[in-house]
Length: 127
Image: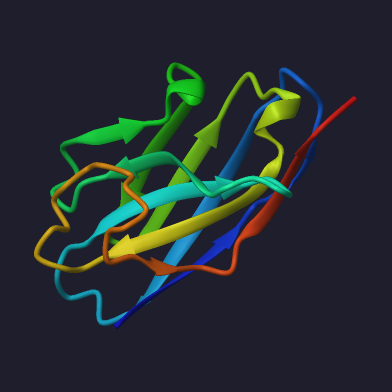
């Protein structure tokens, strides 16, 4: 079983940047797919950015394309979400998730995949 844990959330002004980190523990001897999701109060959880287990393909939510980037440090088993040009509508709890299943090399951010979820970290964008 894999266990992700997010960090790096906080407050930032519109137009600013923030980098979230997700440390993955457990049996990381095999590769795994990773994803970042977010959920604002009263809203459904949505995919933000996902990365295939091979590290070669990515998917981004339409609202963050061109502004966010996902990457992984394999040696440290740490996944990053770089968020630039932040907008108030980006405010949400951000969750990291990992997928070690047979579908792990799928880069899609579909919610019905076999994800294991972190507890989330709050991101607030306001002036």
